[in-house]
Length: 549
Image 1 (cartoon, rainbow, N blue to C red):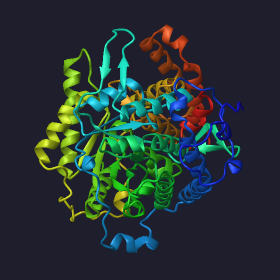
Image 2: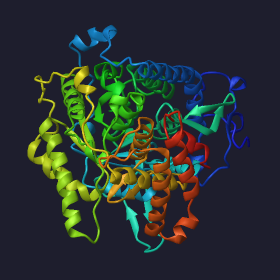
Image 3: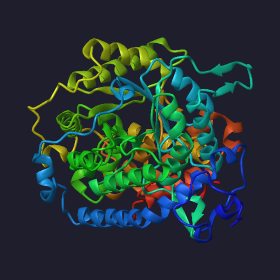
Image 4: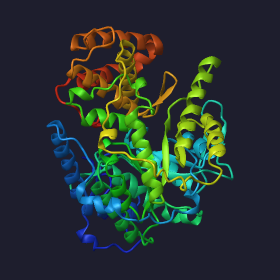
């Protein structure tokens, strides 16, 4: 490890430390500095990171171990249900704290990675908020992470620009911009490039601490605040950990408690049973819940991976009209509005289809139908992946939601129990679905290993969540000897043969130069190993991270 940076060598901190300098453990960063890294890896930011790591990393690891124990119970056939020990929280009459004015109307939110051009375009888009993503749409190379923090540092201060290297066009922020939110990585992901006390820090704590320490004052000066999206929680205890992190960080930085606001993505099947409890744990800092549909589908496959009766059909057949997804949506809206929290809809992954008017019209009609479903259900806003979808989403929500939100739509008729949340969707498994999963999975991993976590493929914006569905479905189909509608068995020999054929197809689509320049062989090997392994990898980004610089 290269001790490129050490708290003891960085000079005096800008705020009085909570302990004397001779007790500070070193923070070791194993990568050499990238451009402007000194502007974001400051003494105050690294001091906060070290403090949060020392206070909370042991709890984080304990909660990850609890995930493994819970998975073992599911593997033995114990199905999830609402927790009896927290029944009083679900029954009691309580509400979250009030949200700031710039989070009162969230009718259209755009999401994307933290690269410079994306940030400028997203903040300028005709949307209410922009979620800058360090998680599923960001490959966590050291350069991406540090440059992302620099880009947000400039964006918060309204001085971010981007110069197109080909056209020379200069991109600048408009006078009116969207409210900025940030999604750190999930609790399960380490940041291998940074160690405290010889231990890798949490990727979540790194992303959170660096952004918060550098920007909380500038955000306040511009009339906004530090707003976060929290991904992949599996229990209210994981939400409690975030809440304690928020309190400790605000205290250390001299911020008023409750300044931080967070929206939780309900994107795991286990979290769906603890929505009330998650909001309760975060009630001082909560802003709402979001239907993270793609990770939710992946979670359903992952958690019930050993259940032969829980095999899902083609991804394309698992729509939001599927009863288990509709039940999850209805329960989320009812729960949020009962507690005064916003219920945000899921991602429309469609992107404009260039050069094919008919296909583009069909895609946009799909987006419109999806947003109509969400608005009529009572959602207070929705997600899009491309600025071109903003007019459609705005038009739908403006027509159905004339006010800033739909908190008055209580959905008191909703009655959702465990049976509804666990109902396995019906549909066919097809050879086309098998091949599509292979093509998307391999190409996504290839892009991710090359530093790109947000990839347009076949007219959809794919990220880690959708790639997870691809490889998880294939693993599930292989393990349980599923058959396609033509009656043919999905076995390893068929998978190997189809993988070879689809790589040839990819070769034809992207060209020889791209195939040679990229890391397709490594991507194909990793994808194949995860699909054909006897055991299930919890996240594809964990083994892929080992291959990432």
